Image (cartoon, rainbow, N blue to C red):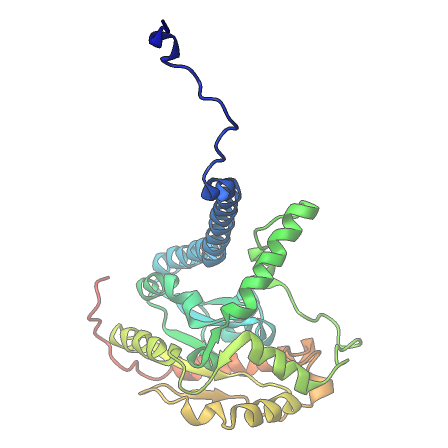
Length: 323
């Protein structure tokens, strides 16, 4: 008689059953998902870093504004003038002390000239600083005219940021930009070796690849809003149409099919044009920046313009903003 209990729990004879087909692909799919998650995380982190890459710029210049605020409000005779723009503005003007001396020669002895630039600049760069500028209550704000029309293209600058990030890792270079050099460095120190190798047409193509430069830019409305707030606070505003080499200006107008001056109209905001004709090779050391001798002449003219503007009554004397 057979003991049926001996068969209980026995392993059946025959080859093992193969696992379901979908299990064969489980490991590769999990690995692929892990890779995608890692790539997404790295991409998100790098994009976040790119969006906040200008934090050093903001902190550094908030400190500069605070320092001028302290000096101005300690001296009742002091006058502040703030200029915002790109690197051509830096190379068209002298630094704070030298601009103060020029203004003194034109009858404004207590001028504190605060120039803030980015390279290349868009108005959004300065928006974190605007509340502090309004609190400073400068007598005059000068805006690079191109701020009304320019916005940086992420399709150009994000890959450049990733390249710089890779260089930082590979060569152990610092990621943070030198903010002092940005504000006070000179693109060209000597006219004897002008950087005119190249085609101005290619320069304009590169410029338009970096900047969305157009008459109907969204930046225009943001600049207008700031101008209205400044005027309500009794602050004068003027636009600077900084000179460019004629070869560049002609090609830029042809590419844009318009002159930006035709659209640079804001209520009670004059556009200041340098009245002297400039020579492309003698007065510029590259396609964008003035040579040192031209800078000295332009800065002297600008100091006279500032003095003339400050001699006129402000648009509104009574502030509607809290002090």
